[in-house]
Amino acid sequence: MSYPTASLTRTLRHTLNNGLTVLIYPTPDVPVVSVRGDLLVGAVHEPDEQLAGLAVFTAAALIRGTQRRSFQQITAEIEARGCSASVNAGMHTTNFSGKALPEDLPLVLELLAELLRQPTFPPHELDKLRGQYLMSLRESEQDTRYRASQALRELLFPVAHPYRRFASGTAESLKQISRADLVRFHQHYHPTSSTIVIVGAVEPEDVLRRLDQHFGDWQGTTPTPTLAPELPPVPPLSAIRREDVVLSGKVQTDIYWAVPGLRRTDPDFYAALIGNMVLGQFGMGGRLWHAVRERQGMAYSVSSGLEAGFGAGPWLAYAGVNPHNVERAIAAVLAELALFVEQGCTLEEVDDVRAYLTGSLALGLETTGGIASTLLSIERFGLGLDYLDRYPALIHAVTLDEINAVARRYLTLDRYVLATAGPPASAG
Image 1 (cartoon, rainbow, N blue to C red):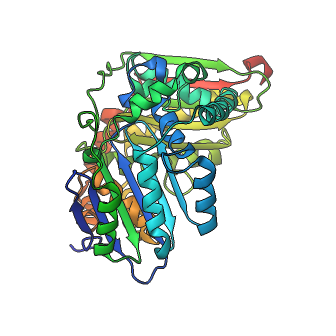
Image 2 (image 1 turned 90 degrees about the vertical axis):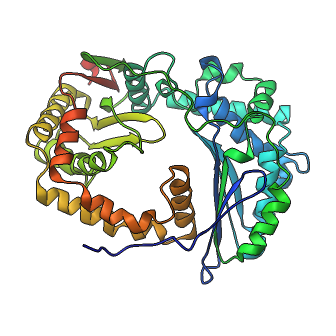
Image 3 (image 1 turned 30 degrees about the vertical axis):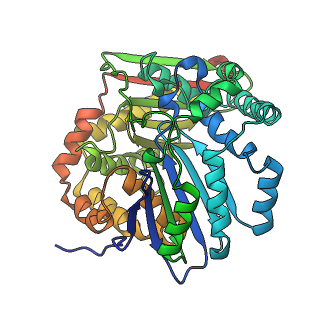
């Protein structure tokens, strides 16, 4: 059977002499150019938990000054041209992006090269940035959803595992990070672990010439980092673990339930993707929404999630509830999970999700930024430039039995972690 497809096979893929991977997708009729890129440097590469947040702090500090421009000069040039250039970091990668009219692309590429290659980490700017991050973290510490998610990860992952903590770090760890730590961590930025994607009204030959001008002589000072350094093993769950975080003065309790999940590259991924859509994503929020919110009125919001990336994150369910309803809402979520595992998806549900997944594929390609982000993900996971052509067949090849078997294998109702955060039970 053949299916309608979106295609990116006319993308030009090129590697600079220093190993930097380049993807260029011309869209002559769209007068906006988007840049997306990443480096294999993230929180998993931090030296220890005492410096948690180092990857995020380093990436955010790049724009605060380079060898050629101050923070004020960078922001003034960006604002004057109406373009953008930014860098941020996550668990496994440091990501950068830009957006401009075609005539301003040279400036964006020049700025991104400066940020990635020539930051100076001015001490006074670092102090201001640290203060902003500390304020944000203090606010997060009073957020029920943040605290429930934090507790969940501490229950699910062992002490030495980087997934146990957020990439943003903690107030304590951020206070420990010095300028010297940033300089050392920045040495892990390496062209051979980097990809840059450019989509828009561009001439590929001109783009390659400018990239070679700004990035061609970039040489890393450390060995090439690996995408996913050897992560500590996650021991299988042998029981139910629960933690309740008390935050006085709150009017909502947030609940997370989770089990260990899978990687994006695992063979079970597509079956889990479809199953998770049926469980708590499709439509307003899948089966969980209809059972827990619509039928029983036990939650303000409810959904499921599958964090399948470079490493295996949690397969989870979430509910935001009235504090009076915490235990009843938990019981409702568990009952629906049990029903999902025992009875499985129906063919009608699976067909609806298949149609949605394949039909919505083109929506992500409506902008140059969407195309660039899609190409970056395809490159990073090694999916191949024909991935979008193959995607509908991949989705339709997953059988109902495979989807239900994956749900039974992963969603263990006698072994899971549960975390809540909200006001004291008596104050609900």
